[in-house]
Length: 160
Image (tube, rainbow, N blue to C red; front, top):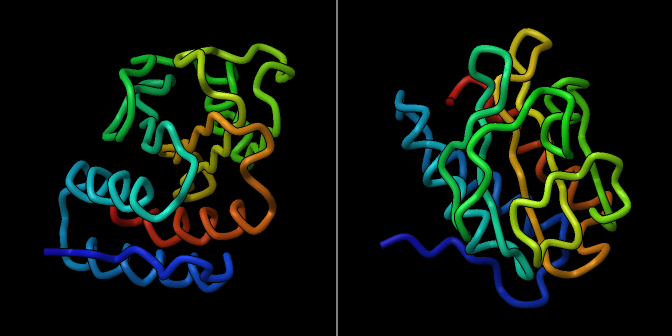
């Protein structure tokens, strides 16, 4: 049985270092990208407080398609450039959104989401997927969260 959760009160940089170590352990040597995304979605859910959704959207034929996740049912397809996930994938940049209701073109897949962090997973300079984290708390995510998830995305770029 795996239990990778950090101790309560662990500083964010250390918690993200532990998250990266756990993700490395879970995905090392596993060639199936869907299996790796499923385990990482569950790991994120376990590691990070105040989430109502953690998971992946995959870039398939020019649009984002729902991948493995933990949380309530979600939008299945998102056009590139639309919503927080679509912007992250199209621009290849992290989207750190304190209030999703103020984000132009936000796609509300879950009405309880108030903040979101979306990090593209890049391969050869192009997004192949995004890691999407949603929270019911406004301003739940900060730069330390973004840095931690960006490190995870870099590690996963050749494992999904």
